[in-house]
Length: 55
View (cartoon, rainbow, N blue to C red):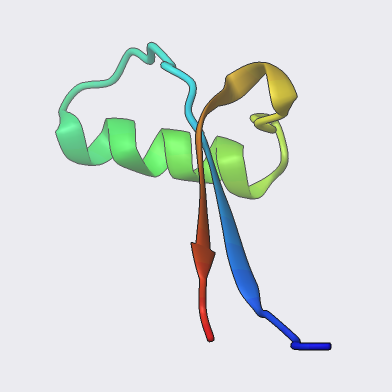
């Protein structure tokens, strides 16, 4: 029997609208929200998967 190794990658994506004075502030706010777990991507945010044979 031969052993095969695969790599499975899933991509999740969600559009978030945020108000801020500038791009830097917006990025800081969204990063903070994500880090604190206020934004959690789940199966509803699934957009793509890929399966690749490694060896």
